[in-house]
Each structure stands twice: as structure tokens, then as C-alpha cells.
Image (cartoon, rainbow, N blue to C red):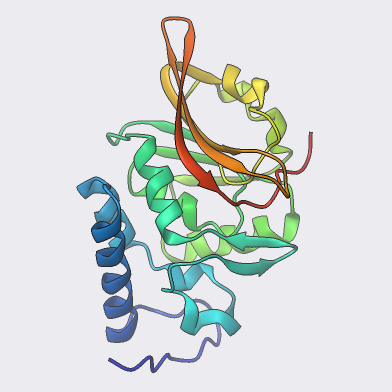
Length: 224
């Protein structure tokens, strides 16, 4: 099917035969390459990624790669979004803290998998655009806050899960403290120009269990 994309004028581009087809092909490729749950695959099929990309990149919305969204930030590769969402092992009733709203796409996927997402963004323009995109698709269980992600939201802690969509040099201790017993944190850790690793940290009986999902490349986490 040719990529005959409609023009974006006022507001987001609605789903069309083209966007539905392109999204289905993307999710099928991810399913073939990665072991993700049926729930995560269903969420990826539901969320219209084209709503969260800049208008001039609309025809690239369903490529399996990151795209620039302005202010030196990117919308994450769909495969990485699927893997990070899957690593949280959400059942549907969880409260999640997301650090780094960016485009809002990761939060949108999480909103289909849990009860509530509190998402923190340090760049005001990105926070505003993400709020608008999320509102346009009716995902009202995501709240976007303009604040420094390194400090989290202690007033609402503990959270069932914490997901960080930019790479700190080390695991942020303050955020780990806001994770409940039994909860999971998914975070890429490493230097800007060095090797980063996607880690899953789980609190269990007062200890932190660590799983390394492999090398990744994220923009650096700023603030703190």
C-alpha cells in the first residue's frame, strides 16, 4: 500500500486506512523480532504514533526508529517502547511514574496498560505539545507535569513502576526510593558518548534485583 498520507492542518491526523495498515505492519515486525506480551502488542496497535511525531515527519511515523521532536529530544524507537513497556510487567491497575515525557508516545502506550501515569518533563514546549497530543486522543489517565525528573514525585510515592526515557549516568537513588516493594524500574544507564544499558530494577525483600536487557542509546537525562 502506498504511503499517501493526509495533510496535518488543525489538530492531529485521524487514523486512516494508511495509518492503520502502517501501524499493523510495524507491530508485526516487532512481534517477530521480540518476545512481548499480548497486552503490550495490543497497546502498540491501539496508540496512533503519528499523532506524536512532528508534522513534517508524518510519513515516517511508523518506521522502527527514533525521530527528532525538537529541543534536542527524540521520540523513541517503537521496539524500545515495546520492550520497556513489557519490562514493567503491568497488569492494569498500577500507578506509574514516567521521567521524560518527550512526545508523550511512551506515556500513551503505558496509559493503555495501567491505571494511572504521572509523567514529568523538564522542557516546557515538549510538555505542552505532549499534553495536547494526549488530549487529542482522549488518554485522560496521563498527567504531564513540568518539573525536574531527578526529584520524582515523592508526594505521590510509592509507585508500582518507574520508567525513565532518557539516560542518567547512574541509577537515580531518589527515584528508586519512590518505587514500592515489588515494583519495577526500567532505566537506560550510562554516559552520553559511551555504552548505555537498559536495566530493570526490582525491589524484593529490601534488596534490589537487577536485570540487564542489553545496550541502548538514549539522549542524556537532564536536571538534578
